[in-house]
Image (cartoon, rainbow, N blue to C red; front, side):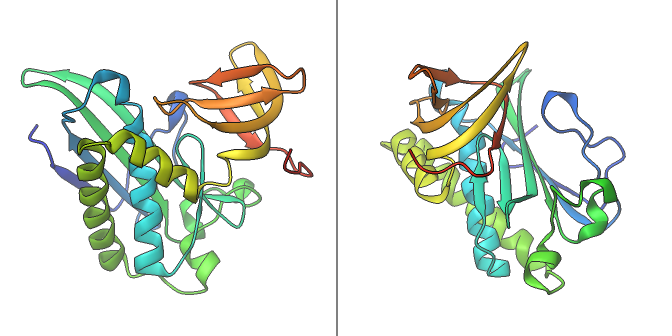
Length: 225
């Protein structure tokens, strides 16, 4: 698989999210996009690929749809507090070396998700009141991915990517969150990111926990601390 190979689907019959969850992908209701990357960065920085992709989606939505979204750690794009897009980066070994496949699913209209998710999911059409121009969005997304990927691999790219992510995410600092881990649930305040993109959370016991895997949700009524 050559680097830069992009696959765009009108429909997916086996869409997946994090932790093997099902990602609904009905025909023409979403933009379903995957790209093959072969990053020339140290292995410890590979988790930043997800953050880089989130920045690219954020850029594309602003440019093509005039939609200013929020980024929820680690891989969701929110609009109006609801999920608009999911991102999944998966590493695989190939005969040409290690590669990363980044999958992006953007809800174009409300057909993209089951009715029982309408309290937690949204779409571009619902947020803007307009039917999105899918071709324009795809062009913006590919251009933004190319630019953000080049930044990540450039000098100081990891630090710059973290800074850009922090500037565009309300979840970076002072957000009250609930974190669900394997066998444990904790609440606390977000305190920025580690150099590898992990989330720092200060618990009510004033302990800093480093979250590298888990579900993070904003707690309503939480105020900056």
